[in-house]
Length: 271
Image (cartoon, rainbow, N blue to C red):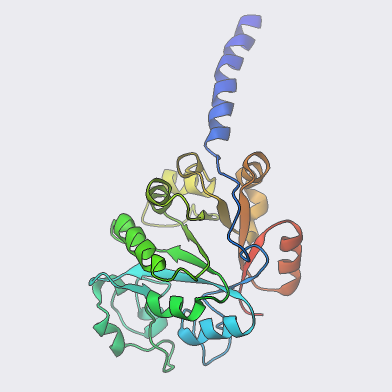
């Protein structure tokens, strides 16, 4: 029996250490003003004339004193478009992919039946220069994670008065930042991803449980607040490594208040 216990300890203890190392993150000082503000999800877009990820929605967020979260894709000509989905079907009623378009092509599309166009990242950054901060989500497609991240960083460099951090569901984005731009605050987006298609179940399970953090060492984890209590790894990452938690997407003021009291930053919409 003693021999069995020793064998089990020799196995369980190293596995436990490995598990905790896989949740590794880091606690760093954030740029001034980033941790004392709420972030409007895709801009302040709950009014009918300001669709999501539009210049109107971003102007509204700035006017109300909010930061903003936005989504960035790399287009065919190397320009960066601010839009959530690769497909324009939901947002612009067109069965095309943003990655297949150029800057000139964007003139043909309008968002949600309004006069608002799909903005370029540089247009959004010009709005926020010297104003409220941004959470920039990078959305790779078809293996362009490195080119997207490099292009986004080069564009952000052109606007030194914009305060920002970068997040992504794709840990390869964080790996590029860790290697090439370690000074940028980087975050792993996650939630219950097990039902997501396009990747193996094992990959989605690992990302749900933040097991890529050991490689990417994020400064923050942006987690779906509705399932945060189901992720012990999120609690361990905060406790052991001081990783900042960001909560998405919060849809009522009471929940936002409670999450902020728990030390989370809040990405919100609809109120």
